[in-house]
Amino acid sequence: LLSISAATVGWWMYDHVQYAHSVEERFAADDPTVAEDSAARINRVLWEGGFFLVVLIGGMGVLTRTLRHDAELRRRQQNFLAAVSHEFKSPLASIQLAAETLVLRSRDDDGKRLGARILEDGERLLRMIDNLLDTTRLEEGRQRLQPQLTNLRAATASAVAAIAGRTQASGITVTQAVPEALAVHVDPVVIETGLRNLLDNALKSCVAAKSGSIRVEATRDAGGIVLAVSDDGLGFPPEDAGMIFEKFHRLGDELRRATPGTGLGLYIVKRLVELSGGTVHAASEGPGHGATVSMRWPAEAAR
Image (cartoon, rainbow, N blue to C red; front, top):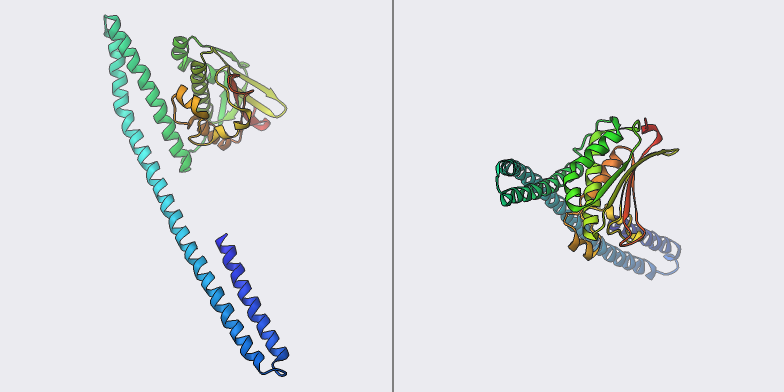
């Protein structure tokens, strides 16, 4: 906008100077004062236009410096988050190992209960760290995908098994409807990370809403393959369907209070699926009516 404004001022100055010269050439012979008026007009145009050009150029300089400073600050923040996340993983792994040993060797119920609680909180922190690391890789363009044939039924079973302990403890039922032979030619990381985040979100939504049903379904149609995760949890207003994939976005104060998280899961899902050539879509009939988030890949990726 500043560049267009500067170009407009420059054209305005050029046009008025040319007009003054044309008037001087037409009437200077008949009126000697025309030359003086023309010179005064040109000087006024040059001073006024020059002032605005200096202001605009100064504004562009300030804006450029601000944008560069902001970009550098964001780069430092991403590097800090990545460094801190890496530093967290090692002690967390040690804590989890110690907690697992405590659960296995403890002979009293309190020890087992506390060990299980440490394990649960450690897994939660590891999921958060993984999301931060995934976000950093995506933001910096370091995420490299290697497409290969991935069986959706096996990937779904693995993802559901990973949260089986949490779903059982919360009394939530997870059903799977994935054809045995259905496969898609994408990087397994996309399927694994996508299902992990979608199931984690669905689980937290069901716990907050005190509901108890999650469904994972895969279908093939003329447009390609769709892998969807549905729940009967909190849901969201239909008009917010596009916003939930934005980084750090969380739906409403009620959801912030009811569910833990950073607001990165769906952002990561969207970026990974789009990098693999697919699309994502979210739908809900409104708060309290659950939600469905689906990942779709085109027909050429289907196997």
